[in-house]
Image 1 (cartoon, rainbow, N blue to C red):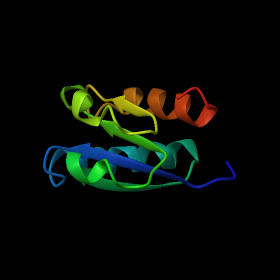
Image 2: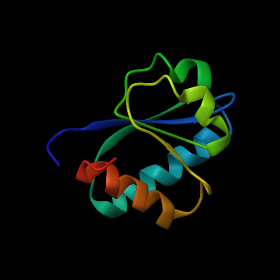
Image 3: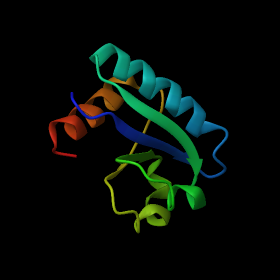
Length: 95
């Protein structure tokens, strides 16, 4: 991968579940041999933070609909298989 992507993990406050999601995303990226800058944010901050991909729980999707980059719901923040599928689709350009 030539470009280093910026991924934003989002939760309501930007301090709890988004941090857990960030750690798991970083683990999966490392396992995949891919590099990305992963940041955490709350919903309001996510709308103005430059990034290439947003990951958040599905209940936050209506609040993130105005974001111009791909926004993907994550059902289980600790499910590496789910995260790998999302990240692989994104990195292939299908995301």
